[in-house]
Image (cartoon, rainbow, N blue to C red; front, side, top):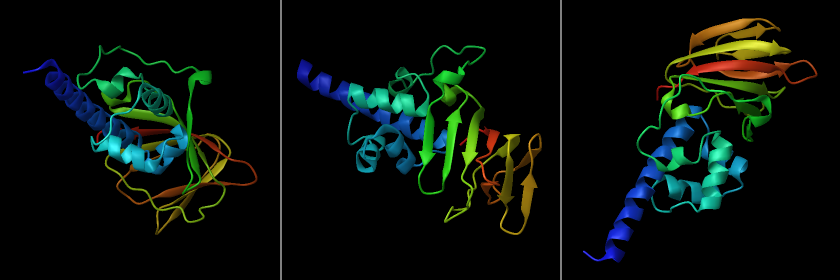
Length: 196
């Protein structure tokens, strides 16, 4: 086999590993392609091709993806888990914020190496209106703690109001959506089960 053919095969394998890791990381964080596109400045079409293994990200694109997903860039390229630390630190100034433009939610991840953890903690800053926000539902459980402000959680058949200091734990397969109440955006600590 020629070196050129071997190099192309290696790049194809690397590309498929990248596509699998990117989609896994994105889904574990509950990030849509639209939100990732907005957070990285890359097009939705390009990201879709990367996820399907039809395109390999450049170094610049990989750096943008890693920053937007709050992971180390090597996590995008490795199909083997890295050395697992017993803790994960994300300093306040290291939090990257992604915005969901279609449902008015923004959040900041509070953990590194999300692909290796079962719990995914993040800060959530819901919009003050539901607008056309779709109801979310996903596998696992969800825990909310209102750090600041007041929120309303809509479970389709029931609405629950939470104030500063209140907490809510529920089955995340139950359709739900959230909004801030009052004049200011609320701040919540959210922890979801990371199993996809």
